Length: 152
Image (cartoon, rainbow, N blue to C red; front, side, top):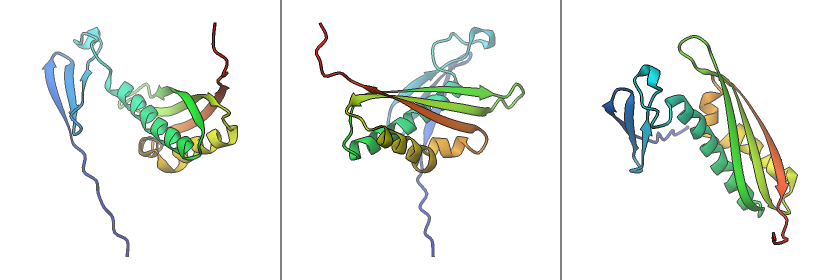
């Protein structure tokens, strides 16, 4: 017998004016959502589809950093660059997404970084799991060795 536990999350979106909205999550944190001037926005906040890419980047970053910490890797910086290709016709969903990790640290093992990226992509990242239903998601990474020498 399998028991399924559903986790409930809530968010609230409030219209401010024109194409400007404010979103608030269960955590109490908020974000401004706005459109471009051509649809009545003031360009004051992120677009909804940009938030999707940022959500993917944030989700996979948390996974990768947690895995690398468990592997006792000395990570000093982590940047995730995400590019998404969308359909020309509505609904303009993502069809291809590429996630590029730039991991900096001391004595990082490339095999550990590769494993962390793959585990996030294939097992842990909830956002990636959802988006992969409609988009081809690819990943790559770059490992940068941080020099211990002080800069002058």
